Length: 310
Image (tube, rainbow, N blue to C red; front, side, top):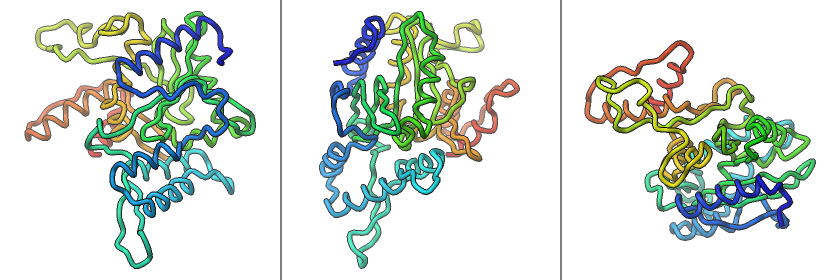
């Protein structure tokens, strides 16, 4: 069993319960003593693809493409491997049953129907690399590890969890495990949840704020624009509310599909204001209406335009 501290254990138990009972993730178990842990759980992915009507021949070929994309040999950087994997996740794997067959696309994630995917979590996931490490919670979609959370007790700063994530991505530890990872997170009860992507520097980790859907800029005070970060349905602290809001299945996939960019060697994801701004702009585009997204200096205007275009 896990040997993490009692206070962190309480926090982790509660977050696991939220993901299971409130957000509908399947609990795979405590993987501390499991020797076959990987960022692609082949059995789970194969089972899901078979349920979608994909033939075993195409599954074998798609798994080979995914394995080659995530391989870290010959001086390949984590950024490059992660980018190659992301391309397969977002656009599907192009394969042929045989040399004379037409090219087919094997979709590893159903982006159009969130509920058609298999969302699962495991805790204390022991990974063998240059040195053995054990992320607190790993999020899998169809058997592919797409998110990781490091949790700390309230008296330990979230920055410690961020630094732990960064250390884990080094060659000396479990860098290869992060080739499939899309959101990298750390949290505690008082500071909430901070998030980034692979190799995000500590100072660039972001804090999620939930936009108030009832907010009216013409009549409401400015501080009413966002919901209370520590009070929400199903949660009563900053960590619980951030987990419930950010890791909702639909939003989790939306953040990965629509709000990831690889920019000159740096992988980036969206701030909360960019996410809500783009989502609102998309609705205006659909109805052929114009509009304005207000930005302050340095708030990410260029990336907002990129994500809206995507």
